[in-house]
Length: 245
Image 1 (cartoon, rainbow, N blue to C red):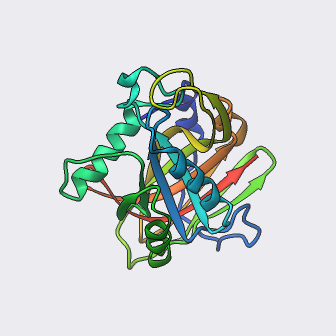
Image 2: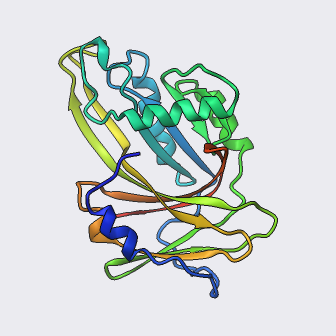
């Protein structure tokens, strides 16, 4: 996973504690109906329609959309400006968790539970409509701190709390590869991903993050995602929330 230099200090700043207060009503962004992760690449000729679809999904207001740019298309002659081997590995981990060895772009993963071709609007919307996130995650801003409240829910299993940063928009002129000559607009581009700790279903959790440190590397948004794991592989996403500056 991508690590920022400041995260060594940040881990010492993040506070994980038992949740003793209900989530505040003035959350900066309502918990979404779905988390949609798009695996895409600037070197993939079939990806632009999926990139555009992700933008429209984010505009719905009930979807947390994230674009993971993979690196395995770089061989065609254009190195994706946001591509990371770690994001390719995340996609492979999803496939492995579903008993498959096949990965492809564009692929959208909905709530960590189902993968569909990212350009097939009807299939994507159907998967979103059938999905649900059982855990409400609330975020509030207190000056330069972001407060995150994750309630207890004994009916669920423990999960990992992930911090994902992203860039809301990037304009890229592609000079080589399958999309050579195109000027592309990319949105919700993941710029980093870091595990913060465990969410325990019996006690819940509260966290505090220093916003200037988390968004110190040209990122514009913070997503907090609670996701189950099995044998080190990603499982269903239980809840999520986001903050954008």
